[in-house]
Amino acid sequence: MQVKIESAITGWSGGGTITGADGTITLTSPLSEDSAVGTTVVSLTAASDGTVTGYSVTGTPDAADVSSTGVVTLKAQVDYEANAELVLLVVADDGSATGTATVTVPIGDVGPFTTTTKELCVKDGLGPDTTFAVDSTSGAVTTTASVTLNKATTDEYTVPISGAVTGGESNILTLTVKVGDCSGKEKMAAALGSLLLSLLAYTLLSM
Image (tube, rainbow, N blue to C red; front, side, top):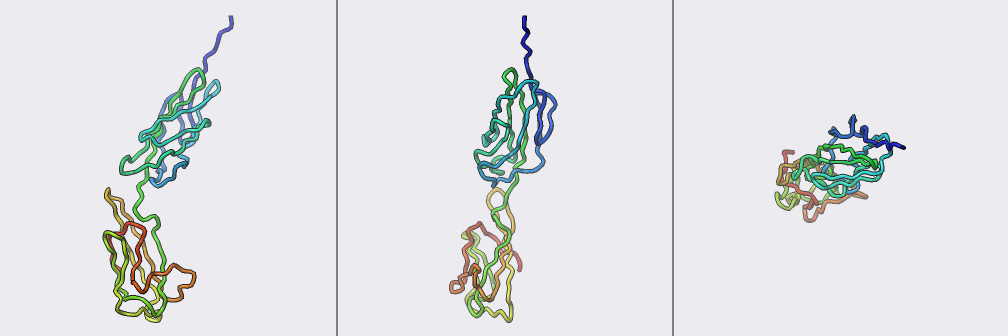
């Protein structure tokens, strides 16, 4: 009589190592909360004394998919304020047995500014005074329109702006305003003396 030998999951690799069918892996590099859908979270490989036929995944939050080769990707964006980590249960199946890798992925917090530097230009001989302010609600950066800017006197201003949102995220945007030839550069509206940032700006730091 022929005896059928059952196979088994014997280990995991990728992002860490598991000896045996089940175990845990904790990733050290955070997954940024602004990572796009489709971003690879981790690539796992289950070992078997048979042949692994497929993978499945569940997660908290439910934000991941897994391919037939063990590549885990985002199917939805994650939010640090809602969950500071993503916990994945990745199951490998070899037709006779299954194994589960529990993968913990830290989520990286991102401040409201998607860039930390921005450069603008005001044409020499035009524009407002050198006093800058930022509206705490709209994020409009403004200057008083009383004194003409003069490149010979001051050709560049650095305006550090702190951004914050509910939940505690914050970072700083350094706005550089150059006076001179604005050809090919993003212009600040000199006549209005203001720039509305498409960001969440709240506090003008000391210049």
